[in-house]
Image (cartoon, rainbow, N blue to C red; front, side):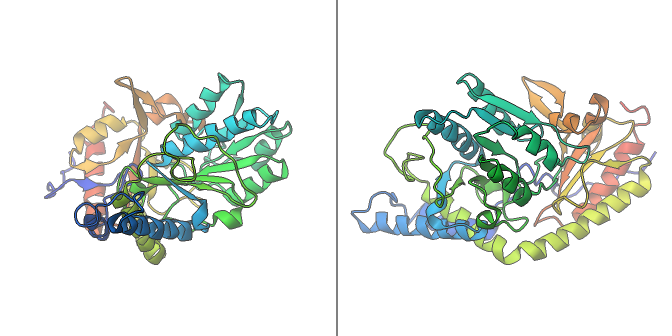
Length: 393
């Protein structure tokens, strides 16, 4: 029996693709807007409202700068799920209203559920969702996209970085293929934002979605990039006061938006240093696990992957059993929880893994606040959990 490591003083958090700790500097930037600077940013007739509005616009500029976009191309939302819905459904419904005959919506089998479900919802409105396969490395073959665009398509949606495997798609190249075919191009960049350089203007994408809580900002805030030149038109999902260029009505959460802006500033300054340190920690963990666990497999391309992700299949073990044996380690399974049932990850299944292999997979997410001691504990805990379950229960 392998000896388990001493229990840590606090849980060791390695689930940074699910969410990140809010950076203390971000919290400090938000606090005044919960207390002293509590004006409604839409109350332009008095000083507190104008101060809140100024903070919102400063944050908008910071988000735009990190995205390689213009401030007037940023629409604040509650997060990437809402932004993805506005982008996909908004583009489709505007096309119908404007008499555009195209009804094909092209996306990828490994997209986030909110993208896949948005495309599926549009089938009831007369659209044709096309879901493309990926290779075993998780990457979309450009020729597969070209073939799907042989018939006129309205929109292509491909995520920049996969939320389970960390695999990075060639958004610049895929967007170019879509533009050549005359389709709009949308990308969910929630997992790329603040982790790898993003240049939406240079990539020539039309729409892009982000979330604050993926880059050490607060939950409940995100943004949608909507290209201005050439201008992309969307139909809003719901009615209201017409805030955010009429695309997203409702009072803006100035504290959260200020936090998102601060998180973008920090990411711009520290992204490259963070990535180098995180990649070193990932190598340390992978080396230790690989040395102790024969047949351990990394899922998805290693060269085309963000620094903080490992998606690992443990042969002969279930992910649930490993997590149960290491209760102080916060990682996630390669499964999605739906209706109180654990189902094999559709992302991994799309990459060719069997149900058994998908059920034996853990997603490990290393981040800004991960220490070398955290990595050493995680390695020891997972090795001990693996060794103590010879039956693969």
